[in-house]
Amino acid sequence: MLLASTLQLLKNDDFGLPRNTTAPTCAGPLGREFGTCRLWTAFANVMPVKKTNTAMRTPSKPSAEPDIRVGIGGWSYKPWRETFYPPAVKAKDELHYASRQVTSIEINSTFYRLQKPAVFAKWRDSTPDEFVFCIKAPRFIVQRKVLAEGADSVARFIGSGIAELEHKLGALLWQLAPTHAFDARDLEVFLQALPAKVGSLPLKHALNVRHESFRDLKFIQLARTHGVAIVMEDDAIHPPIADVTADFIYARLRRSVSDQITGYSKPALKAWAERAHTWAGGEVPEGLPRVDKTQPLKKRRETFVFFINGAKERAPAAAMQLIEYLAARKSGGDK
Image (cartoon, rainbow, N blue to C red; front, side, top):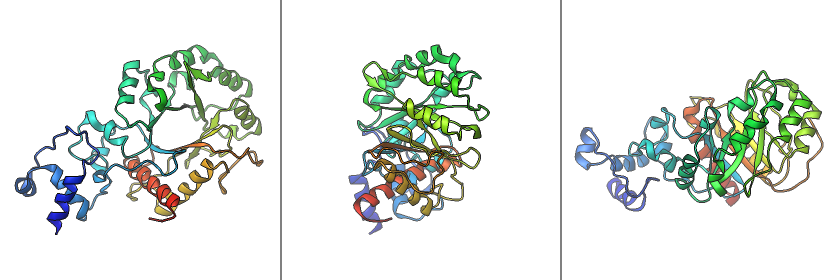
């Protein structure tokens, strides 16, 4: 019965790999008897294993709510070779695989260096049509003491080739240093330098602030005036700000722990699924800290939720579980 189930898996499932991927021969008795790591992967889906088996899942379907994007930061991370990627997935195919498990990825490499247009085009062509990238803006812009002096650098980044992502371009993340305090005039000049478009593509801007001084009504009003989303960061260190200031939501969840296979506990993930659904529906979730207690205009909002750092090895499992909860919520079920 077990062998029959396994053969059926092999017949019907490509495990998210490119069609021309060849699985390597396994070492050990199982590999010698059955021939390939692909067969071992199928067995791993139906046999209990000690480590998380999220690496062997078939590609997750996009969230049942298309306005909600759930993902991870980057796709190349060594521990994920153990907790996320099947053995047959080569390094060059990691983006192909990852983009079929989650519905968005926050590109972090752009924080350290600009990428060439051809690189963005390659990323675009490696992912499903409905997939969306968010891009972390370079540190040479956001880590300077006077943000207002970065206008030329902003233009350089925007013109570096991000438009090659075309319809797969999501939000741009501007993450300030934890030591950067709120300066209303400086920030206003900076926000004025953020363009509304690149070519014909509209741009979404999300501002990730990490200093307590930003818990100021003047900051909330400034962000709202410029249509910039304030990142809601679930973090034990940095102050969370859940005020809605734009026509989209950007949340970064950073409390994953290693002893939870899905990073967050299942009740916590279900709570975030409910919050994401509420945001996407145009309302404000209860229980999250806000500076301005007035209710924003009710309208549907594209919602990005990323699992970033914490126990990063658990981020893909957390994202996939959240996607499952959102799909179950939409269909009226539970998992």
